[in-house]
Every structure is written in structure tokens, then in C-alpha cells.
Amino acid sequence: MADIQGALTRLALDPAYHDIFTILKGARNGLVYGTKIRFPHALVMSILFGRGSARDRLRFVFKATKQHATNLMKFVAIYKGITILQRRTNGGKPRSIDSFLGGLIGGWVVFGKRNAVNEQIVLYCTARVVSSLLPRQKVNVDWPAHKPIPTDKNVFQYFAAITWALVMWNFAERRQSLQNGLVNSMDYLYVNAEKWNSLRNLFWHNA
Image 1: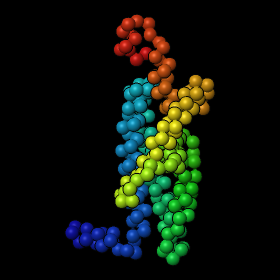
Image 2: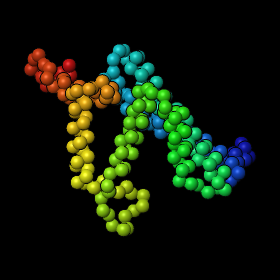
Image 3: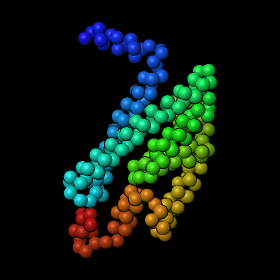
Image 4: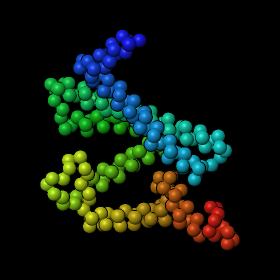
């Protein structure tokens, strides 16, 4: 047993197989991370807004978790594979375009199919990309390289105001264009606030 484990360890540490194991480990990490992220989110959403029996809700949680985890697994594998291939064709030197093309092809293949999970992931990433374009706060020259530079506070205030103005206008005037999870949340916050038929229902009942 020890001999087998030693042989496998040597294989895993062999530079000749580094790229292959990088793809495999990346795929594994995508599967684990997708499960960790989606399972609690789907569970909470099924409890708060789910419909149907307990079995139906559990089926929803399992389906959403599986889809999120396997999609991340496939995306990481495709992205790493493409960037490694591009690096190898360029004499082992990475280029700026490599990550763009890897994301482009992976996004098309894995996240291009519109469904609830993919839509949430793409919208989440879109928000992060848009916010990354905002001007940054001025920081000292010794600012840690691994630490994100905060958005300029004055710019962020305008950004927040405009975002909420557009969200509320869309909800009031063209709610069918908004993502379903957001509409459900806003229905509970704003529409439900106008409905009650007793004192108990006013403060303690969710209906």
C-alpha cells in the first residue's frame, strides 16, 4: 500500500503531468466550491419562497446545487485547459489575451444556456465587472497588492443611488424584465407591506 501511495505521489509531483493535474484539481475545486455556495442559498430560498411539498423543495435544492457545482467544475476545466494550451503554443509564456479567450469560450459553452442558476451566476459576475470599472479611492503607495482598492466613496454614493432608482423603477413599471429571485424578494418587502386583515396579520403573519 505504501509503495502504491509513493508511486502516486511521485506521479502527482512529476512536472511532466503538472498541467493535467492542474485541470483535474481545478475541476474538483469547482465542484466543491459550487456545492458550498449553492446548497445553503438554495436551501434558504426554498424555505422562504419555495412552493410545493417538502420533497419538491428538497428536489429543487438538489437540482440547483448539482447544476451550480457541475457548471463550475466544467468551466474551470475548460478555462484552465484553454489557457494552458495557449501558453504552450506561445513557448510557455502567458499572454493577456489568454484569460479573455478562456473565459469567452468557457462562458459560451457552460453558462451560455439560459436557466435560473446560470442567470444568477452571470448577473452576479456582471455586477462585479461593472463595479470594477468605477474610479478607485486614493491609497498609499504601500497598499497591499492582494487587497482590493475600495471604490471612491463619492462615486459609490452616486452609483448606489442610480442603481436603486433603476431597480425600483423597473420593479414598478416593468417587473417582468427582472430576475425572478429579485422580484420575489421585492414583492415581500414592498407589495406584502400593503396587505393585512387583522392585527396579528399586520406584524406576525407572512401572508
